Structures are given as C-alpha cells and as structure tokens.
Length: 315
Image (tube, rainbow, N blue to C red):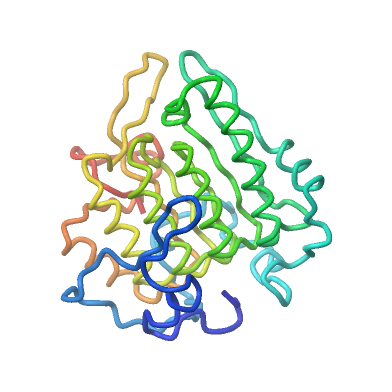
C-alpha cells in the first residue's frame, strides 16, 4: 500500500498469499478473503500496475464530486512515511477511539425505518490498524445492543451513510470495517472511501461484502476516487455487481410517496491508478455489463439516469 512504490507486481501471487494469509482464508467475523470472480479462461488486462496515470478512470467527461476543483490537497494524497500519517498507537486507546466513534455515530428512526449515519472523515489523529480494531469492537457492542432491542434484521434497510474518506485507510482496515457491517447485515447505501490507500485488496473486500451481505438492501453509491485502484480491480468490482443481479442495479426511494425506482450504482473511480479507462469500459461491456458515463449531470445523478433501461453502473 505504499503510495510512492509499486502496489502490485502484475501477478496475483504475493498479494493474497502474503497480505491475507492465503486465498480462501476466513476472517473472525465471516467474510471469506478470496480472489477474483473471474475464471482462469477470462482475459486479464495487461496494464502496468502501481503508477499513477495522467488520465484516470471516470476523469473522461466527468466531474469530481468529492472535490469540486478536481484536485485534493497534496497532504491528503501523499501520506508521510508509514501506513497512517499523523497517527501513533499511543493515541489509539479505547477512550480516545470511543470518543471519536460516538461523535461520528447517529442511528435514529425516520418514519417506519431506521437510518444510520457514520461520519469518520478526516479524523485526527488518523486511525491505525490497531485503532480500527478498537473502533470495530466499539461498533459491534453498539450494534449488538441495537439489534437486541429492535430485532435481528433491523439494520437491513437502514440506508446507512458511511463516510471514512480522507483517512489513509489501508486494505486491512477496510476488511475489518466491512466484516463488522456484514456481521450485523448493515445496509451501507452510501459508502464514501475516497482519498485513502485502497488498492486491489480493498476492492476485493468490497466485492466480498457485496456477495455476503445479501439480506441487506443494496449499495447505492460507492465513492472510491483518489485511491490506488488499478484497471483489473475496477473491472472486478463491476463484474461482482453484475453477478449479483437482480439485487443490482439497486432500487431507491426518490420522493415522499415511498415509491422506489431502479437506478445505477453511482461509482466514482476517478484519480486512481487506472491506465486504460477505455479498455476497462470495453471489457465490461463485452461481459454484458451495462454502463452509463453520466456525462450530462442534469439528466444523470445518484437518483436518476437518462437511459430508458436502467444500466448497472454510473461512471
């Protein structure tokens, strides 16, 4: 995950074996850490890995919702030496983590349903992996208490808005977080993870979360810009969404009537390590994955699409 070095060596060996203890390992909370849904016979994109491109996925005809100016402060994109700039384990005691966790947690009833909002963007000092372990432990206690009071399936339609952007989050930290959400079947309608250090391992965590959390309502928005995601990982994410039809594309409520309509997943992948966006798009379409580039933001957005037949993904 070092931003200045090569994140990948062009092969799957070493990524899964070293980082996650081997293919098919099961974490304590149940997500199975596997590799791609792609079969060996499927062609892989031959792209140089681990280098930023001047022309990244979804930069074409696309704005940057996470940053209206199209750029981020360099201090947010280039962490200091070490995986979590500005953070030390000495700050990651249970009391400190509980304080920031409580400040960023809101779960309240809206009408007949519950709505979860987790706001952990840019916390200082940044969470380390030890800090994320403490955070997930705190979150499990809070969600256990809620489910005991309101029922086992009470979080499956909570329209959760989860924001962990600008945190220098590693792949392992993302695994921990998504494992916790999967354990309690939390619907993460909006997952904001932009401006972190998420690469192939983190994308696989998201893919596994999508596959495992089937009883919860679908993800509607995935904000992954300004990370370290390469061509194959971007394609893998779209493949996973495609294999989960008819859950995807998701349905979302668009007005007070409570009626829902199908809308594409709002997928932000600009400013990553994608080398050939056109090749990724062609490969996706060749696999039967329907895309809309959302070039006209008056016609396309998080709750609407200009296409008569709802595509799988907005890029």
